[in-house]
Image (cartoon, rainbow, N blue to C red; front, side, top):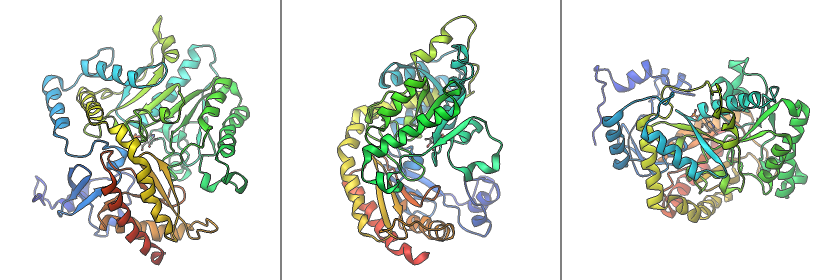
Length: 463
Ligand SMILES: Cc1ncc(COP(=O)(O)O)c(C=O)c1O
């Protein structure tokens, strides 16, 4: 399929990209120096194509988003129909059927009494909304000092000021200080980097890691802490699943100190781990779920904060209201597309497909452990991180310069050149991350493994 190489204004597409498009989280120097801007023009299933006609496996579902795969006409047609009928109306004191139905459907799929759905346009806004709700809820219920939040080191929770404060990645935050005060960090559940006495005992490690939350609450003062934000499987750092017993203990701690447990499922919800909401995969009931990405499989943007009945209680009476919102929150087109997306999940049994095939995906990726550079393969469902190490025996990682030359100088481009779009990330220790559309199976696992093998075999020569 030929692609236009010039824009409507007659400029070369690459030149226009260099001159005008400000890409997110990007080093533009590469393009200023004449590098091609990778430009994706089409997707079908788990494949994407660039402007030069080259084909790639979408090993990251865009950005942990495209659960049902690319090119679903049904979702495009749903968007068209909804836009024709009612393209826009806000949910500021008004409603529209798509938002009502989606709220009901999400509540039905959420565990416990998480029955109230507050729509946003994305994940960071959902996290932001959850912190604000936690603060106001405690003010309305007689515990006005409770405002602080606890989250984990290296975790990413978004870029608005509040969500960035919750994020545990100092390099992403430094340039935007001062951020929102009151956000405290505890260790994450990276057992590969746990102390030697805990490394081989996941249960003890889980207990240790959960108890750090209790300790932080005690340090800060229980009457000042409002919420704990945790991903079911932490993305940044390379897919840290919860050790056995971790969430059970966290739930106990939150109950003991009356601290809200927020399950940030912006990545993990909608089948990524195997269930509609990943807290179910790990057997805990949070007070709030934040979600976005996979809700529409990316065919239109939307996010949500889903809160328990208890948290909505104060808003049922008098003049109380949650004075918070977004013009495009619960957008009719996005809400309609989300409903159609969830229909596809049900019709095609995508969650069961993930549950059945996840062990095979893991086994296939674990074959890479025979390479000297592959230290660890970890994750759950269709969500894996492959940690790269300098020395497997000692688990020694790369220094900043080595990481720079290998990850940025070689790996990212080499993987793309090998026809695999995925993510080489050094926000923690260097990892390659995989989260393909939920439709893939063994043939694609093998294909991904083969392409990774070729590139990772070469990687040590590029230090
Ligand atoms: C766990 C988590 N929370 C929040 C966000 C922010 O979502 P968004 O980019 O839609 O604002 C992300 C984005 O990747 C995420 O992974």
